[in-house]
Image (cartoon, rainbow over all chains, first blue to last red; front, side, top):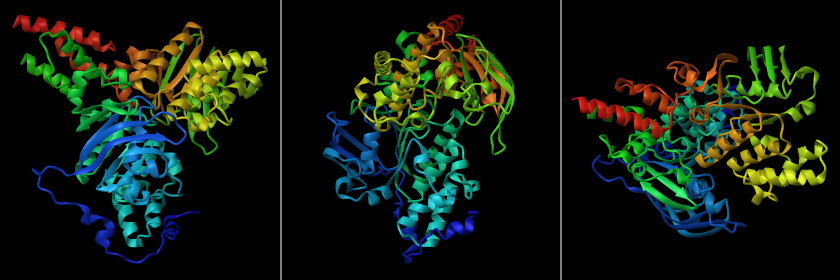
Length: 319
Length: 276
């Protein structure tokens, strides 16, 4: 029988460092609200071709992300979203090899010259399928495992596990086996285990793809919370834009390895048809676009992303 | 074509996944099983080809009781495409993966070649014919799983969450494929919680919750009901919510195309603005 007390023997003992430093509490800069947020990701003229492949997965990508931004990444399957995300935490080119030009700076560190285990403490990555990320016998042990690998002291590990469970509201799952959890719960555990590393950036590659709508909404809500409460920078790729866009500061659309749109979602949806890029806008914004095309008595300067925004605009018109 | 008679299924760990399911599906019907994860959709699908046999009650496929037939016999009639496509794969190339079942069914090599070619072309996988199935992307793996089943052309095709991880272009392709299969009088059963996709396909919908059927009706009947989808943890289609919220202008709740909704809205608005 595997219990919580035995799972704690899992933790490696190691020398005690400065607790605050280990917890990453000193990382949080105290910025004035008015001050412009610093750049945390800078991608310059990035092109990449996987080893053995003739086609470029990324073509001259330029991108700047500020600390605390919530960025939605969209585009058809195979457009380069996953490759770009892998570049942001150094998996490309350190794990997935290939021919890379240009550079990626994550929190000032050049990913080519920084070991993956260092980058991954700054930019944590959550994958599509949580089953690939979970393996331990209990949720607690799963979250603790990467911290043990870092050789953190036991108290620090316990504290961070506690914090991560709490940040996702899954304290009640602590002693459960990851394999008996629902898809949505598993994905939250996967996020918690990444979060326990105290990254500044959370990168999520289609995290809701196997979840039912209510669980997907619930997961997105948790991610939005992390962005608001912890000031975490979020970069998330997702097909279900109706759940994501109401919360995103910015929408990036990729096609054939290049960025083809980058900006305020409401303006991007107003100015063009995204279906050609394999991206389905929320249905309400489709209706709004058709309304604009008619040039009738109603016009949306900003395309609504939710039913509520749409209806409010209509009510204002008729007074 | 398919009938469930008071079917109950209890997993070995004691979880009752199907609870008194009675259901008839006719030849050529398209049916969507909808409900949250864990509501019993996949368990129900696995009863179609005898992977699971009822603990109580019985399942008839084309008149054959699944308890008295082997999975191999049922597989000719019912092709099941799993949600986790990878669990179907074991061959070293995409081509071999599709050819395997056909050879097993005893088709001649020339027929096998023709059908594999057709299925791979149809699913846009020909470029990967010599690649390992395990190296495909998530969306490609799903298309391969479909290609395998399409190649042997069973009468009943059951798709478990076919739109998961698919982009909009692939979803539209899937929609076309389902409509094409309907033309060929195939019976199609889809488990899905992709509300927007199903609202566009407009099949008969069977709503499940905790192993039971809670509603069985047309897409309009299910999705335009204010409470039903939410009670099963499904978010209603946006068009349904939008048209309901706009009913103060005289719009009727519907699942119409966004363009039609825009036109109806402008009509209603111009009448109101004209009056005042």
